[in-house]
Length: 382
Image 1 (cartoon, rainbow, N blue to C red):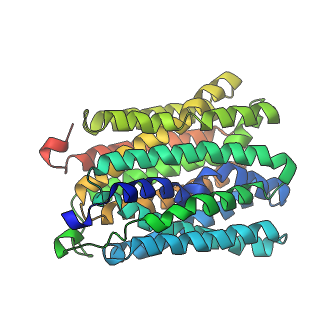
Image 2: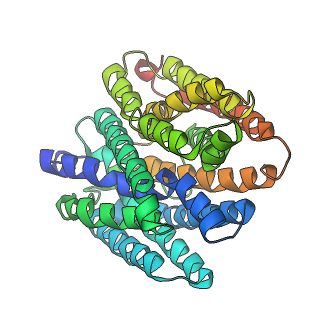
């Protein structure tokens, strides 16, 4: 990065405000899966696969753009993604035939992918990338709470289109900040970092850790509503619990912003992954109302906290912005695989295999993250 490419305060705020739009598919995942499974009568397994394909479309879009992201105008890319996602959301509300709904959801994934590729590449242009990443996670967390509250509140009066209406409203209102984004085009060859055929040491391990974390999180989140029903929660009580839990999400982002790099990466990553293992066990393996409530209340906090440190790790390993852009792709490949794997396990008599799968995946992810962190410059390590 050069001085001429540094984000202005307004551009930094615009990035923080717009970045949650790339996460709408993940944010509203359980509501979309339930709507497809019940309201559109596709069944839980098919609904999980459709959501996985939507996330896969997002991930493939990001990975196809990432090799060229350094030279692309990220403001235009974001605005194009917002426009495509808006059209797909509006179409999803209007159509009643699932043969039209499925391709519209794939187009929504592509639009989200354009937003993700652009916004994930911009933090390296900030004067303090780690702070910008942490505040992006806080805003994503706030958006998460608003989205869950909106989808839950609108479910009864609006019906099966509630999830798509929430998407549309957020894109139409928050999306306007995209016009204030920085183009974020590299000002010099030095800003491009490593060549397209060569990635910095440790980057693939960090990307693998990020993908595995989101595989686990998406697997747990995709069937969280059905798991709550399975342990004895009524629809009203469960909706209230999920809404309260959603609004605890920013606490993880605030914790990451407060801690910043004071404790390095090793301790925060161990805490983040460890708490996620606890959540997977309590939500899916214990089959208790109390255990489920305890797990789901801390589940959402761990995502922005751990993501902040993993994205900061990527930014430290590759200062060109390509690493954090690929991080968006890793997130969505993992998030796409999570519901797909959970869909294979949800047909079993017990939901415990989903929790055990998540714990195993998180263990591997933590090992990869700690290994990648050793490739950072010595002052940045724990």
